[in-house]
Image 1 (cartoon, rainbow, N blue to C red):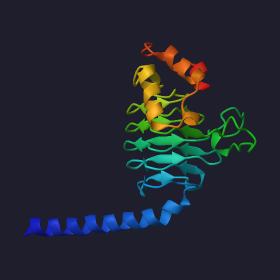
Image 2 (image 1 turned 90 degrees about the horizontal axis):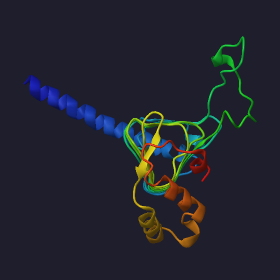
Image 3 (image 1 turned 90 degrees about the vertical axis):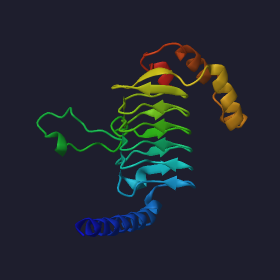
Image 4 (image 1 turned 120 degrees about the vertical axis):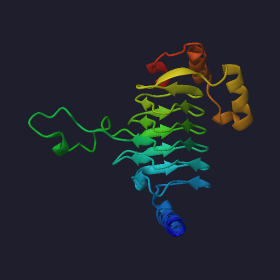
Length: 216
């Protein structure tokens, strides 16, 4: 009898939770700055909705924390997150003498402290990865679970660790070119300079993401 009662109460709880989550999702989806079709997000995640732009066919995963006060977080098309990903646009000042850090006000014109985050198309961000302000992740990239991404990640690369480092490219450059031709029109494909950076990265396992790669 006790087991039956417990199962009944659990069923009521689960169904009630599903209804609550569905209602929250419908109520909050319109708060995102923009979003495309086939957009999935966990209504129990933490978002600064108005500063987040999301493309089409995107799944933000389970319980993410995606926050930016004044900067923008831009997420492209065909992007998927694992559980509990954190993206943090903006930063705090730590250089003021005689003032607690929590009390320091930032100059709205100080772009170095409020840089946003850009995630390109076709990116997979693994479980509990952390992406910090100012980071751009190139399309087709993979971010390993638990990584802390502090600088740009080139297209079609696999990055992991703390701080995240490029481990390898997903494919040889020739295969990346073929992949791009099948998915994107000519004007959207990687430029020759970007392909040259990928060629330089090929075979350099464990190499940190270089400033040159970060500029593309």
